[in-house]
Structure formats: structure tokens, C-alpha cells
Image (tube, rainbow, N blue to C red; front, side, top):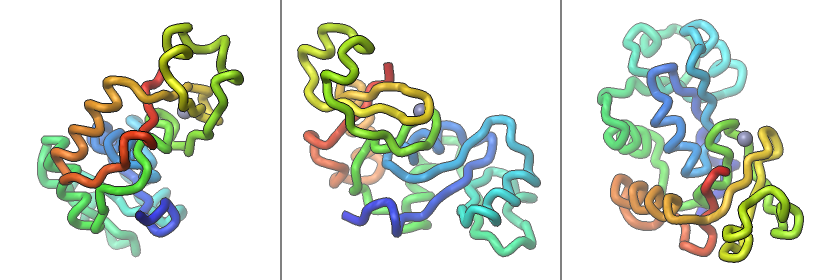
Length: 171
Ligand SMILES: [Zn+2]
């Protein structure tokens, strides 16, 4: 499956926090700030070559040379589906390769490196860990990652990353 390089980068408007999180779950570079204003949104998109995802007609009608997708639904599943279709996002790639909070790619860490930072039972039952270099959150595979995977597969169809690769569970 294609890696992040040739996948689109996004910027989501303030109303699309759940969509931004879902795109980050898929490992897609998605800028999101709940306090961003329309101007900043458009200028950041232009400067960083990001496609704008917005619920706002006025933003969608910008004259700036940026890619814009006007999101039609308030429902996050429909939003994700619309985005995936518009940008031909295949449900592949590595899930949870990006911090859901910072949008930064997480780094693999050895269990011995985070020994003091996660509960003992997690250390005993999990093998693969990763850490956000920005906020320091530690991710590991866990039940709610499985739920997220199932959700993504249900919305986008099967083909999300195989179980072994899945990482998640913020601390
Ligand atoms: Zn982070």
C-alpha cells in the first residue's frame, strides 16, 4: 500500500475535529486546530499544500489556488466516506502511525524504553509500542484500537492494516 509520501495532506476546519481524528487514525497528515479562523485556514492550506476540508460554503468558494472539499454531512462516517472517495484514499496504510493529538508521526520504541511510563499489565501483555516525539504520548495496540479498526473497515470497506501492525491506545 502507498505510504504517506503520495497521500494527500489535509487541513480541516474547526467543525471537523472528529473527521480530523479519523484521518489521523488512517495515518493521514491532517492539520486541525479548534480555534483556527477562516483566513488562517486558507493561508495554511496554501502555504503547506494542504487540501481544505470544510463545512463552510464561504471557505469552499475561496479564490485562492487551493484544493477544497465541501463536506456535506454532519455525520463523521459520511464525512470520512466523502473524503475517502474524493481523494481516492484506499483503506490501506498503517493505522495509528500518527499521533491523534499532534498529527506527528509516532516512533517505534522498545518496551524497555518505556518501562516506567506504562502500567505493568500493559507491559506484560503488549509487545509493540510507539511514542509521539512531540507530546510524548505512548501508543500500543489494545481493545479500542480494534474497535477503531473495525469502525474504519465498516465505513471504508475491508483492507485496513493487518492486525499485527496496528498500534494505538493513548495513555
Ligand atoms: Zn502527540
